[in-house]
Image (tube, rainbow, N blue to C red; front, side, top):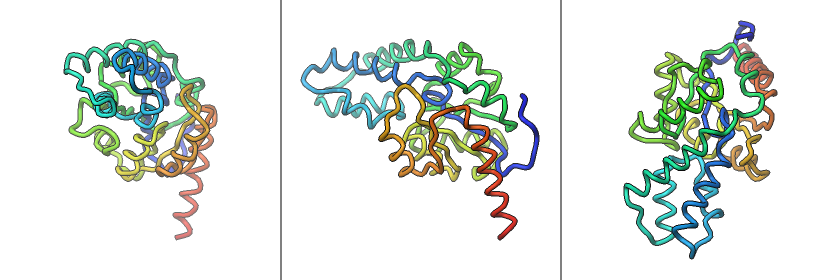
Length: 236
């Protein structure tokens, strides 16, 4: 780690996986669209799917089945999840993320709505694993996935850091909502292949303090946010 130790308003950085560490959301969305269009030719899948991104895939499929007036069996759900994960795990790391993480001198954890096995595989394949080691909190480890705060509270508990001193990076309304519910400050990232101009507005509305699109900006953004918080603390 090349980041320099200095006074900080934060004691940990917690990152979502898909769309923040791995540029996988567009790949996963496309695979989901293909799987569901093959089953339900009578509805337009993509517009219905977009607002659900960031949620656990089982919830996404349940919502889409309700729209279609259909039922997916447990075997179908498992099969779709495997196909989506098999495609998404091959996606590249988000541009600039490795250098950014290396420059940020904070303990790090990953909190994801994906399954642990998939997140482990994605981080190992992209060379990002060493930033997080086993500090992974995924949907299969908690009773309630995002937008509930469980994965974030689990991560902060394992790190031994109070929620308000954990800084989160998220790319979806679902994730921002989860982090805000956990009492954590959140930065919104919109530089992934799946992002759109509308995403900036919805992430801010969900509670993101700042929204950015280049991971190379993250270390400086954290330093500036920390300095502003420390200054406010000295003035109060």
